[in-house]
Image (cartoon, rainbow, N blue to C red; front, side, top):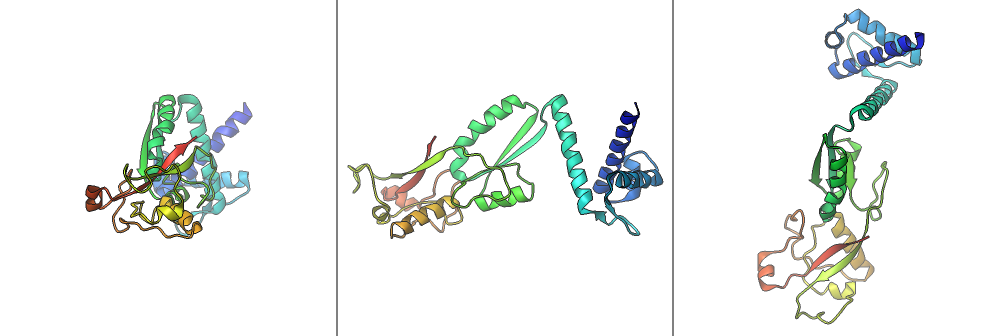
Length: 251
């Protein structure tokens, strides 16, 4: 059928363009595609004429893709992936950036995904919310698990997973032993061990303390946080004088 032949030609020319973008050299791209350099150049030119846009910046040598060319190849890459998924299911690696307090719930997301897509690998990286935003912008991450409200991510699709409530862990025989609720101002009188200020969880706590007219007294600000548990100086742990704020899941 004529339209089938035309479609196959367009796909072949897209493959030429993809090889050129990857090799950044006309001769090498032609060799990868098993065609001559004039054939590759002519094919890309025909594709440009068919689409009505320039794909390649031309000069004495390959200078790069135009903005339109990059968009065309991105769309072509997405089409290839979708067709592959339809035939074989997802393959490759899913890269997830997660802030430390969300790590315990990440398996609730990855386990069903891994069961459904057995040919994929999953990489989970503990990161700050700022690093997650950067990773999503640079496409080094596929998914970010972080807070939505305090410092919302930009240029992404968001899906709420759960809500948090804060619990103060203190000594059984401490000053709040018979209390079910403690104000932020009261909590500020304790030597607390929250995460360090580069973590959004800490910045949220700081905000709540300021709203209560208090300032947090953090015992471990100069220490690097453990990926899962807020860090505390050893002497404080031994004296049982450290008090922790824990973000608890609330579905």
